[in-house]
Image 1 (tube, rainbow, N blue to C red):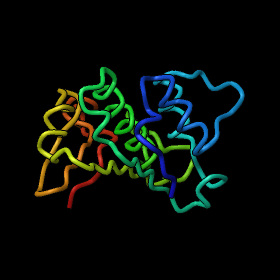
Image 2 (image 1 turned 90 degrees about the vertical axis):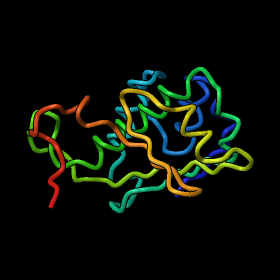
Image 3 (image 1 turned 135 degrees about the vertical axis):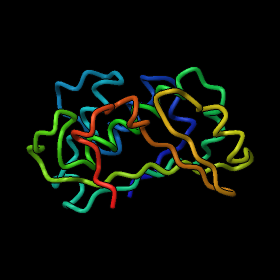
Image 4 (image 1 turned 90 degrees about the horizontal axis):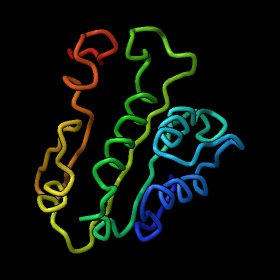
Length: 153
Protein backbone atom coordinates (compact mmCIF):
# COMPACT_ATOMS: atom_id res chain seq x y z
CA UNK A 1 0.00 0.00 0.00
CA UNK A 2 1.24 3.47 -0.89
CA UNK A 3 -0.08 6.74 0.51
CA UNK A 4 -0.07 10.14 -1.17
CA UNK A 5 -1.24 13.57 -0.11
CA UNK A 6 -3.50 15.16 -2.73
CA UNK A 7 -1.81 18.52 -2.12
CA UNK A 8 1.26 17.04 -3.85
CA UNK A 9 -0.76 16.15 -6.96
CA UNK A 10 -0.92 19.62 -8.49
CA UNK A 11 -0.79 19.22 -12.24
CA UNK A 12 0.91 16.65 -14.41
CA UNK A 13 4.39 17.30 -13.00
CA UNK A 14 3.27 17.02 -9.37
CA UNK A 15 1.41 13.78 -10.08
CA UNK A 16 4.42 12.25 -11.83
CA UNK A 17 6.78 13.34 -9.03
CA UNK A 18 4.53 11.93 -6.30
CA UNK A 19 4.06 8.61 -8.08
CA UNK A 20 7.79 8.42 -8.81
CA UNK A 21 8.54 8.82 -5.09
CA UNK A 22 5.99 6.12 -4.27
CA UNK A 23 6.76 3.38 -6.83
CA UNK A 24 10.02 4.56 -8.36
CA UNK A 25 10.68 5.24 -12.03
CA UNK A 26 13.38 4.16 -14.46
CA UNK A 27 15.95 6.70 -15.64
CA UNK A 28 14.23 7.02 -19.01
CA UNK A 29 10.86 8.00 -17.45
CA UNK A 30 9.20 10.67 -19.62
CA UNK A 31 7.55 12.75 -16.85
CA UNK A 32 4.15 12.98 -18.58
CA UNK A 33 0.75 11.26 -18.52
CA UNK A 34 1.73 8.58 -21.04
CA UNK A 35 4.89 7.76 -19.08
CA UNK A 36 2.83 7.50 -15.89
CA UNK A 37 0.44 5.02 -17.53
CA UNK A 38 3.36 3.01 -18.89
CA UNK A 39 5.06 2.96 -15.48
CA UNK A 40 1.94 1.88 -13.64
CA UNK A 41 1.34 -0.79 -16.28
CA UNK A 42 4.91 -1.97 -15.72
CA UNK A 43 4.84 -2.16 -11.91
CA UNK A 44 5.34 -5.83 -11.33
CA UNK A 45 6.86 -8.20 -8.85
CA UNK A 46 9.91 -6.07 -7.99
CA UNK A 47 7.65 -3.36 -6.54
CA UNK A 48 4.55 -5.29 -5.50
CA UNK A 49 5.92 -8.68 -4.53
CA UNK A 50 3.53 -10.08 -7.12
CA UNK A 51 0.42 -9.20 -5.11
CA UNK A 52 -0.56 -5.85 -6.60
CA UNK A 53 -0.96 -2.60 -4.76
CA UNK A 54 -3.34 0.03 -3.46
CA UNK A 55 -2.52 3.73 -3.81
CA UNK A 56 -4.41 5.82 -1.23
CA UNK A 57 -4.74 9.56 -1.88
CA UNK A 58 -5.55 11.50 1.28
CA UNK A 59 -7.41 14.82 1.17
CA UNK A 60 -8.60 14.32 -2.40
CA UNK A 61 -11.08 17.19 -1.96
CA UNK A 62 -8.37 19.63 -3.06
CA UNK A 63 -8.36 18.03 -6.52
CA UNK A 64 -11.97 18.91 -7.24
CA UNK A 65 -11.98 21.63 -9.87
CA UNK A 66 -8.33 21.10 -10.81
CA UNK A 67 -7.72 21.41 -14.55
CA UNK A 68 -5.99 18.03 -14.68
CA UNK A 69 -8.49 16.00 -12.62
CA UNK A 70 -10.36 14.37 -15.52
CA UNK A 71 -7.23 13.38 -17.42
CA UNK A 72 -5.61 12.19 -14.17
CA UNK A 73 -8.58 9.91 -13.42
CA UNK A 74 -8.64 8.62 -16.98
CA UNK A 75 -4.90 7.87 -16.88
CA UNK A 76 -5.25 5.96 -13.61
CA UNK A 77 -8.15 3.96 -15.04
CA UNK A 78 -6.15 3.22 -18.18
CA UNK A 79 -3.09 2.15 -16.17
CA UNK A 80 -5.14 -0.10 -13.89
CA UNK A 81 -6.99 -1.60 -16.83
CA UNK A 82 -3.75 -2.40 -18.63
CA UNK A 83 -2.09 -3.87 -15.52
CA UNK A 84 -5.20 -5.81 -14.43
CA UNK A 85 -5.85 -7.43 -17.83
CA UNK A 86 -4.26 -10.65 -19.09
CA UNK A 87 -4.48 -9.56 -22.74
CA UNK A 88 -3.67 -6.33 -24.51
CA UNK A 89 -6.35 -4.39 -26.42
CA UNK A 90 -5.58 -6.48 -29.54
CA UNK A 91 -6.24 -9.72 -27.65
CA UNK A 92 -2.59 -10.79 -27.40
CA UNK A 93 -1.35 -12.23 -24.09
CA UNK A 94 0.55 -9.76 -21.92
CA UNK A 95 4.27 -10.39 -21.40
CA UNK A 96 3.98 -9.90 -17.64
CA UNK A 97 1.61 -11.39 -15.06
CA UNK A 98 -1.48 -9.45 -14.04
CA UNK A 99 -0.90 -6.97 -11.21
CA UNK A 100 -4.04 -5.73 -9.50
CA UNK A 101 -3.97 -1.97 -8.96
CA UNK A 102 -6.48 0.05 -7.01
CA UNK A 103 -6.48 3.80 -6.47
CA UNK A 104 -8.47 5.07 -3.49
CA UNK A 105 -9.25 8.76 -3.08
CA UNK A 106 -10.30 9.75 0.44
CA UNK A 107 -12.55 12.79 0.66
CA UNK A 108 -12.68 14.93 3.79
CA UNK A 109 -15.49 17.43 3.15
CA UNK A 110 -16.71 16.90 -0.43
CA UNK A 111 -19.51 14.40 -0.97
CA UNK A 112 -19.05 11.52 -3.39
CA UNK A 113 -21.75 12.90 -5.75
CA UNK A 114 -20.01 16.26 -5.96
CA UNK A 115 -16.63 14.68 -6.68
CA UNK A 116 -18.21 12.37 -9.27
CA UNK A 117 -19.73 15.35 -11.09
CA UNK A 118 -16.26 16.89 -11.29
CA UNK A 119 -14.76 13.87 -13.03
CA UNK A 120 -17.53 12.88 -15.43
CA UNK A 121 -15.99 12.33 -18.83
CA UNK A 122 -16.91 10.29 -21.92
CA UNK A 123 -13.81 8.11 -21.40
CA UNK A 124 -14.87 6.82 -17.98
CA UNK A 125 -17.87 5.38 -16.20
CA UNK A 126 -18.53 6.97 -12.81
CA UNK A 127 -20.86 5.30 -10.32
CA UNK A 128 -21.88 6.54 -6.88
CA UNK A 129 -23.27 4.33 -4.12
CA UNK A 130 -23.77 6.18 -0.88
CA UNK A 131 -20.41 7.55 0.27
CA UNK A 132 -18.46 5.59 -2.33
CA UNK A 133 -17.79 6.18 -5.98
CA UNK A 134 -16.01 4.09 -8.56
CA UNK A 135 -14.40 5.19 -11.78
CA UNK A 136 -13.47 2.80 -14.59
CA UNK A 137 -12.70 3.05 -18.28
CA UNK A 138 -15.73 3.02 -20.51
CA UNK A 139 -14.93 -0.14 -22.43
CA UNK A 140 -17.38 0.82 -25.16
CA UNK A 141 -15.00 3.71 -25.89
CA UNK A 142 -11.64 2.08 -25.15
CA UNK A 143 -12.35 -1.45 -26.37
CA UNK A 144 -15.34 -1.35 -28.71
CA UNK A 145 -14.63 -4.90 -29.90
CA UNK A 146 -14.92 -7.87 -27.58
CA UNK A 147 -11.20 -8.68 -28.01
CA UNK A 148 -9.29 -7.78 -24.87
CA UNK A 149 -12.42 -7.21 -22.80
CA UNK A 150 -12.78 -8.97 -19.46
CA UNK A 151 -15.01 -12.04 -19.54
CA UNK A 152 -18.35 -11.56 -17.81
CA UNK A 153 -20.02 -14.63 -16.35
